[in-house]
Amino acid sequence: MTRSEQLFERAVKRIPGGVNSPVRSYGAIGEAPRFIEKADKCYIYDVDGNRYVDYIDSWGPMILGHNFPEIRENVIKACENGLSFGCATGIEVEIAEFICEHIPHVDMIRMVNSGTEAVMSAIRAARGFTGKDKIIKFAGCYHGHSDCLLVSAGSGVMASGIPDSAGVPKGCTQDTMTATYNDAASVEALLKQEEGNVAAVIVEAVGANMGVVPPKPGFLRRLRELCDEHNCLLIFDEVITGFRLAFGGAAEYFGIRPDLVTYGKIIGAGMPVGAYGGRKEIMDLISPCGPVYQAGTLSGNPVAMAAGFTQLKYLYEHQEIYKDLAAKGEKLYGGLKKIVEEKGLPYQVNYDSSLASIFFTDQEVKDYVSAKTSNLELFAKYFKGMLKRGIHLAPSQFEAMFLSTAHTDEVIDETLEAMRGALGDL
Image (cartoon, rainbow, N blue to C red; front, side, top):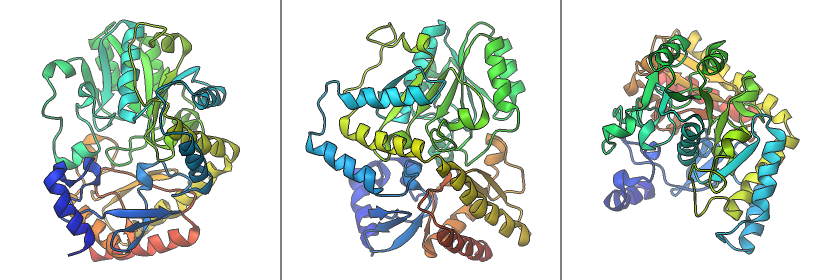
């Protein structure tokens, strides 16, 4: 028995499912998860001494690779002054100023501790600002595990086969309406049906929790127009895409200005950080200066701020990174698509810049319904084939692959050979 298997045997006795987040579970694969001991650059190392090329990147934050020296050094320096004060700190002001000065659609920003908390707070702010209750989300888009948004959610909820969640009262979701991703007409119909009652439309600008599903041309722009026409807010959930597709996130990448935006992942450089921000007149309503209450004991934690601020400054000063990541994405994901086509396999490869997924279906994957047609048994075999070849992917069909600057051309070539072999095994 491996050390990972031993740890998992112990874990399932004390931790639900043996993991502290469902996306870490290998349940759909039928194995014990690999327990990771350390990581460096594009590699992770498990407790059994195995090295894997990592395409999880801690679910996105490690855009500069694992254990980036400058971030590590600044975190250690911050720790020397104390881990938490529960009081205001200078670095909170610095990171807020930095983001607001460089992100045109963010006038003010509030730090929180997770993407879930950021989205929950942004929804509350939207309702407080508009005085309306209804929210429109999209089937397959995951916005964290707050009660009102666990309706047709993606990510781990899809993988487990549970469309919603037990323990969520019907009253919590009665004001959440679900539209079809990449179908602006479905949004327009809901807005007309609930004319004057919709506070906001929230969307993952690139769907990345039903696997990667990019927006069709014109889809996001039409959402902006519809929100303006019906006097409601547009919220971009950029927990995954923020500071990844471009420094200004999907908003810059697609040229669409949201009213509110939520961040996570990269903004913390691996530490637990989230944030929400947007127009001043909306953010002015947040407590203590306004009636929309939101608080967090560890929000703006100095160690987390040191990590996040270091990464954001580096990304801003080296924006050529984004062009490089897009080229790496074309080499890897475009290469995977070519392998699939050469082998005559009826699979779909969806990608946008550094994000990608392969779906084991002959249907174009453009929304939640088409994503769910993917053959999960084939995915499990493919995952095992890649793991056997030293490539670590997310253990779920409905998660993204993430590239970092640490993935070299040589590593990508190695990965493509592994992909060719794993697909051949199928």
